[in-house]
Amino acid sequence: MKTTLINKDSRMGRPSASGIFRLAQCPGSWLAESKCPPEEESEDAATGTYLHDCMEHNRTPDDPEQAELIEFCFQVEGELVENIFDEEASNLTIIREERMFAMDEDGNVIFSGKPDKVYYSPLKDIALILDYKFGRLAVDPVEQNRQLAALAVLLRYKLGSCPSTIFAGIIQPYVSRRKPQLVKFLPEHLDAAERYLRKIIADAEVPNAPLRPDEKACRYCRAKTACPAVKMALVNVTSGDLVASWEQWSPEKRREAYDLAQLAKKWAASVEAKVKADLKAELKIPGLCLTSGKKAFTVTDPAAAFNVLHELFPDRIRAAEFTAVCKVGITELDKLVHSVRKLQGIQTTVDESKKWLRKTLAGCASTKVSEGSVKEIGGGAA
Ligand code: SF4
Image (cartoon, rainbow, N blue to C red; front, top):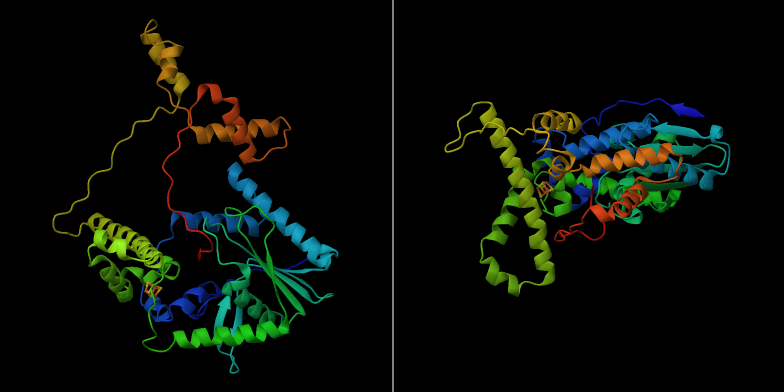
């Protein structure tokens, strides 16, 4: 199997395939973001990076749920490759995490992108582009997904010629465990896609390109805390009497208000983080101070704790009294039971083990159902 080595080239200051959706929705975001410093990686983003790394280097995470996720990705990927190419894997060229560039006629970079994995059969002149997403929000359906179209355009630059067919798909295990849908690009589709992408980028580079707030577009935009369009939209929606207005609003207007509320939450979280950073750096902010963190005392060895207390109060603290005040960490118990079942040779998934455990312990546990939360139906940009 031929493997192209990872290329660590940067984006060279040009738009990337993953950001095309935002440029199409909000052309002004290109310039707006370029004025903002890079943000710290969130915990979710760090998990995504780690899982991508596991996929790239064929590593199994220690966490059983994550391990299963990676196993699922490899399994689905293997099935797709087998179905599409139906030939020896050693005949295929594999490109992993390599940044690719689309150039203009003068050799200047127009945009770039880094597909997670590409399989190419020189024999059949067919390629498969795969992108893994480890977020929990569904991305746009493949046929509308501009990132995949951009990656397909980039692949023909990389190969120096256009494969007769390029399939592309997204494996998103936190969202769906079904076989991913693939989009099929023929050379004529890619000509049209490239014209469209060049137009989006050219429109975004115009000074004073319009800012168009949209929850999906703004979600990961670095400019959101300083963006005048977001502020204006928030002012518009918050300036009236919400209770009175709500009754008058159409469902679409209510949805718009909901999206703006999500943006406002993110804005508020960013402000809070910045205030915290200022106070940590001992900058004065009127009326605010940093409290010391709360101390949390945790018993890490319940068996030893029981022995100590039972020895001191043998008649008052016995096993029954002690376990009555113990809480079982269900996440840890799930992991323990799953690993034990696997060790016993039971063919099971993390989810099946969880269900088994809940059924088995039904007589000595309780289930509480919390109030439901609002969930977005359909595609998101994550
Ligand atoms: S925050 Fe939203 S409206 Fe403002 S630049 Fe970014 S994507 Fe555009």
